[in-house]
Length: 407
Image (cartoon, rainbow, N blue to C red):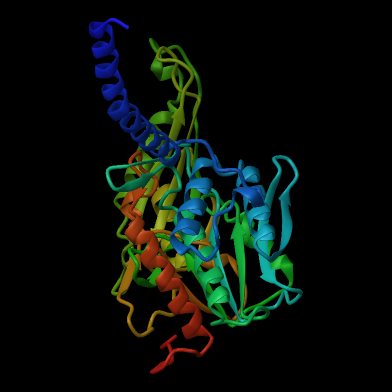
C-alpha cells in the first residue's frame, strides 16, 4: 500500500478512536435529558414502575405521571385510572367510586388487605383548574398544571404511605388509607360523594399547598350569581329600554364596598366578581346581565349573606342567587416540629363528614397555584414526604413527646 495512503488511514483511525466514544457518551446524555423532560405520561403498567423502595424515584415518577395527565375539573377519568393501576400494582386494594357517568368521573379509595376502615386517612384531589399546562422539568423545578395544586400532595402522600409500609413502621392493614377525589376546584362533589363509602377515621390529613406548614384553618365560602333583568331597545333611543348592564355594575359596586367581617385568626373577608356577562350587541340596550361572585368568608356565612343581600336589594332589577356556602374551617395544628400558616383559600375539609381530627398540610405555595407558571422543586416534594410520614406516625401515637391538639 502506498505509504501516503497508509498514513492518512492511520490518522483517521486515531480520530475515530477518540470521537466515537465521545459521540456515544453525548448521545446517552441527550436521550436521558429528553426522557426526563418529556411531556408524555409514563405508562402505568407494572413493568414501567420504579422500585417503591427508591423514595425519590417513586415520588418523581408519580408526580410527573399525574401532572402529565390532563385532569381539569369534570375531566379526571384518566388520572383516576392511572392511580387505580399504579396502586393496585403496588399492593393496595383499590375501590373505584363512581361520581358521575357523563362525564365519567371517579374517586379512588385505597387500603391494604381487606380492612376498609383505617385509623388515618391521607386525602387530596386530582382535578385542576383550566387550562391544562403540560409537564416539564427545567431551571430546578417541575412545571405544569397541578404541579402544586394538588398533584404534588397526591404523589407525596402515596410515597409517604409506601415508605412507612416498607419500613415496617405501620401495620400492613388498618393503619392508613388513601382517598383521592374529583371536583374540589368546583363544587366539591367528589368529597361529598366520598361520604357514601361508609367508613370513618380517627384522623384525616388533607393535602393542599401550605408551604410545608400546618394550617390553623381556612376561610369559609359563599358562591352566588347575580341576575339583572332589563328591556332591549335601540341604542339610539335608550329611554325606551332598561339597561341590565348598568344595574349589574351598580350591584357589583355595592358588593365590593360592603363592610365585611374580620377575624383575628383568618383575617379579612374578601369579595371577588369572577365572571361577568351581559348584552347582545354594542348597539342594543342590554336586556339581561349576569355575574358569578365568590366571597372568602372569615366569619359566619349568615352574617356575610345578610350584608350581601342588603347591598343587592338596594339596586333595582337585580336578584342574588346563592349556590354554595360553608363556614370557616378550624384545623388541628399543634404537632411537634411543625410551623403553622393560615389559608385564605377553600378546601374539601368541610365536605367530609365525621368527628375525625383534621390536619391540612402539603408542599408548595398557594401563590403558585392557578397561575401560568405553576411549579415546585424536588426538595419541597421530598420534604413533604417526610412531613406526611411524621403526621401519620403522630396520629397513630407513635411519636415521642406527643401532645394533644387544642382542637
